[in-house]
Length: 371
Image 1: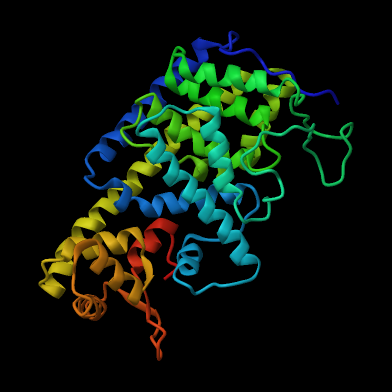
Image 2: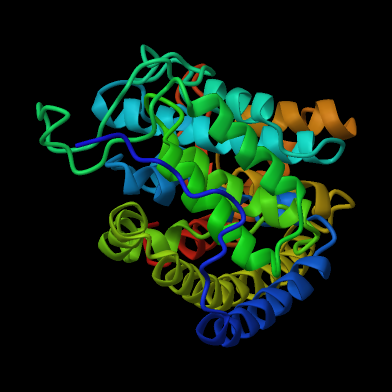
């Protein structure tokens, strides 16, 4: 099989008669979601469980097996070794890449150097660290069953000699304005996956770039729109639609699939954001009633950003960030536990602090009862 030769951008063979009605539906659904996003005063804190869920599901597409609650438990020191620990490290790196990207995009547009930095974070100290983290590939690679030759491959990405030129064209296309930003997002994602510029991690980097590009195009007020739930659920269709571009030049089929993904995921994300916002407001009242504390919002933000935690870590955080006396926080945690807001996962013993969880938020992020 010969290396794939990418289409020049923008794509000139799109059937707008078929695609524009889908564009309208996707734009409307995304606008409704962003309206909710704009109404949240501290979205990065309140929606951090969705960021963790995105990291879990995007990594799951690549074969990683771990859940949101397991990621949070590992961060609280409850999972310390084994294959599960390695999976969780990959997920934590993905989330760190998302957080770093948010900060970068406040001041700069997406550039190839930025994409390489995301890859470096993603592959740091995990199983793919021998796959040249932060560097575009210099060798010909291919995709197929384990051990297959290039002739037996199901897809052979572009020749590495031409890859830098294709990547430059991809970067220039992101700086331009196509007919519609959602059409353009679909093309940006697919072209990146087909270029396959890294030895490993291409799928995850490509999915990270979706909300970042929408934010850069001002389609989102914050880079927080996660598509991996839909793509993981429709994994076979996802791969088949991408493959049909390289095999048959079927960009229309891919873009129609992508727009449907946006429409469906925007509705699901809107429902989940509304539920998280309602839980936040409910807990504000419940914590105030249980503790009668002036620090209600500080504690609430802390357990939303980290819903499984060691009591000593939260005590230190409250003291460092808000000057709350280190003898005050344990009392607040005890009152919240007595009120049923928090649950003890592991009791304290000797010098080991207790590990607590905020079960309603973890269950909401997982979409099922896990705690």
